[in-house]
Image 1 (tube, rainbow, N blue to C red):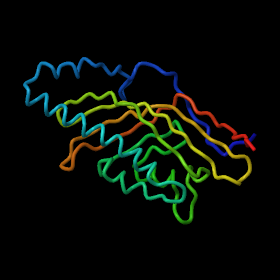
Image 2: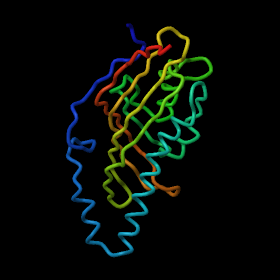
Image 3: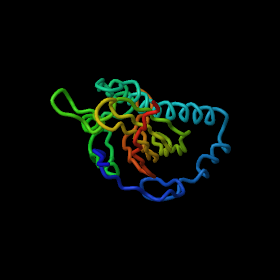
Image 4: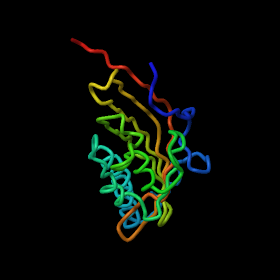
Length: 196
């Protein structure tokens, strides 16, 4: 069965790393126990805001199904104004997050890479977060399920697992993703068999 899906560059699953390839140690987060109560409270507030920021990415994807391509409604509150991404592992751009939105969803004249799908769902693990003042690093595993349009030949579901590796910055509006790199562990196109 031929597949319209792009070729992916898969990585071996390994210990969580940052953008420099260094292990993301929990040691930095354990240092929070040596801080004052107010510092620990601020760390927790930051940690929750970072987790919410990461979740807004998937909310943007999953709130806009099919031909509804308005993912920037949430992504403009997820990425910094100068936020960039590296989605080359999935054949995507190394560009601004707005360019990523266009690559995925297209526009009224151009189909996006997700146009072959009618529905999808992105499930996230809890992120591994390291905070350093006004910057932070996070790594979040994901599992994404995609369903092709019914009635257009063989119906295919595509499942993918990987991780988002993020550099975040504190802004006046809260934490935002300044840079995101996509890693893929595996992806499986699955043909749907009729049960009737």
